[in-house]
Image (cartoon, rainbow, N blue to C red; front, side):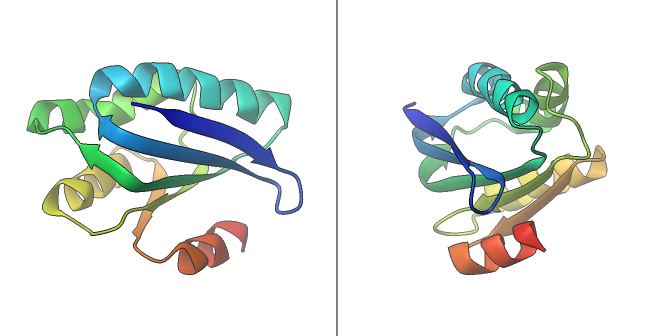
Length: 120
């Protein structure tokens, strides 16, 4: 799973772009790096561009992603927009699980709408 993480100074947010298969094991490494960015830039807004990513199947893995993100250092108060190409049932389930476990995450298919929510 290739990914890229950048701090966008103009909007004061962290941009994460993920491509390919995305699983619980991938999340551990990614979340640790994102945590470093949140601390380095004192930034709690994250744009997750997953339009070219696919969730690997596995309800248990999806259910454990919020716990993994939190244990990797991503605080529940971080505001995170999750942008996908198509809102599959897996991505809806992922959003629901994150929100039910106290994370401020919202699912979008339009990047402009995601940016508007994230920055305001």
